[in-house]
Length: 83
Image (tube, rainbow, N blue to C red; front, top):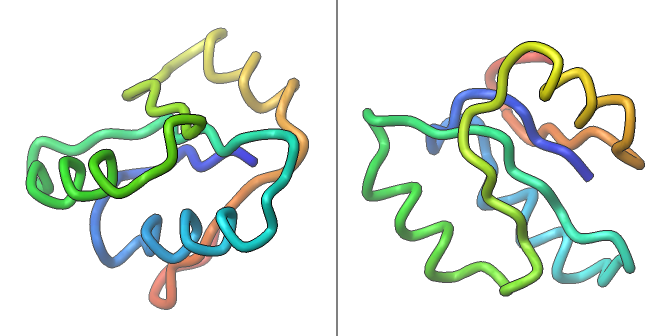
């Protein structure tokens, strides 16, 4: 599962990571996002996530295209904004 958006609390990444723990997929989530505005949130996500979660930071251009091309699914859990 790939999440590639701005990493802020209102985007609901914490909900996505909680759900991924319950599903226990063989394919770990990849978080291709970061935010200087939400440093505490980012640190909290990283400290409470399983080791298998990939936090790869902001990804752009052809690298982001590769992530989209190779992901098994896209994750979004924002209650306020659509994809």
